[in-house]
Structure formats: C-alpha cells, structure tokens
Image 1 (cartoon, rainbow, N blue to C red):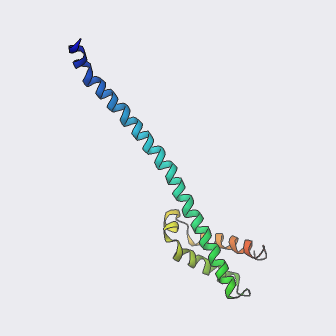
Image 2: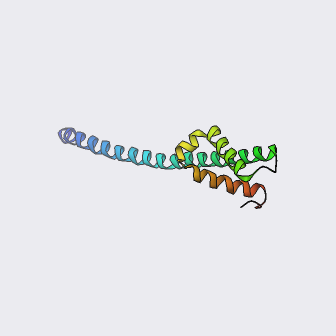
Image 3: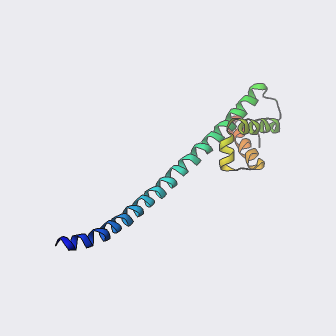
Length: 113
C-alpha cells in the first residue's frame, strides 16, 4: 500500500499544482478586469470634474466671455489637473472640446449651443 501511495503522490501533487495554477490565473484575470474598469471610471470621473471646474472658473472671470474661450480654458484646465486621466482615456482635442461644450451648456442652462 505504501508503494502505491509513493507512486501516486507525484501525480496527485502535479494535478493539484495544475489546478491551483488555473485558479490563480482565473482570479488574477478577474481582478485585473474588475479593477481595470474601476480605474478607468475614476479617470473618467476626474476628467469630467476637471472640465466642470474649468467651466466654473471661466464663468467666474466674466459671464460675458465667449463660449469658445471658456471651452478652451476648461480643456486646458483638465489637461493640467488630470493628465493621468487624459493619458489613460486618450481623448483627442475635439472630444475634450465637445465634452467641455456639453458641460458649459449644463452650467448655463443650455443657452450656448
């Protein structure tokens, strides 16, 4: 009986090793997918918050300033305040301007199109 256990032990350990490797790989993949999405959401929220801060700061300087100046300032503010979010999400200037235009419209009640 002892001889059979000695023969089966390496096979059992090898099988257990394969099973544990698969479980660890699956857990790592799930964790990466879950936290990767969380990180992207935080970057996206930070970008939107920075654009809103830029719009508000521009409006405080003078509500009669042209919308394009406010949008440009909001984009510049976002680039300066959340560079990691912009790097991670990769929006081009047109996308940032469109987002800022949308934020400006929400701040001023939809008056600027």
